[in-house]
Amino acid sequence: MSTGSYIMLKVKVVIPLLLTLAVSLTACGQPLVSPPEGAGVPVSEKSRITRPKIDQNDLTSLSDGNGEFAFDVYHNLQGIEGNLFFSPYSIS
Image 1 (spheres, rainbow, N blue to C red):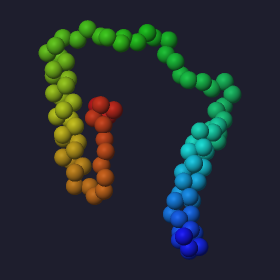
Image 2: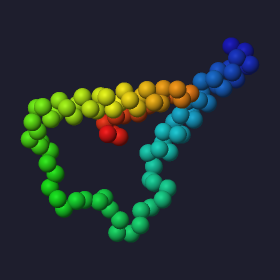
Image 3: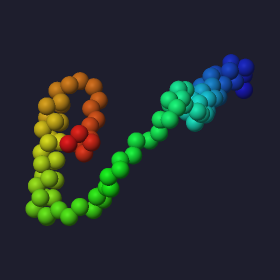
Image 4: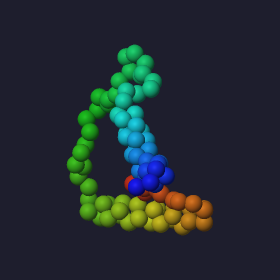
């Protein structure tokens, strides 16, 4: 292997691997900004209903409405150039 080939191998393989490792390790570090003293995760005092009793007709209507909403949003945004990603569940 010639010296030029060895250097190109380092440039094409080793350096990107080292950069990927450095970015990965940086992402696992401590946050750059500390939260204010006494700040914590907000917690509601109200109990959460995890399995509400919903009539099947209401559930079907909700599901159909979410689907229609998703298609309406998509049709309104499809003319915009570039990549498009949205989740109808997070905005409905």
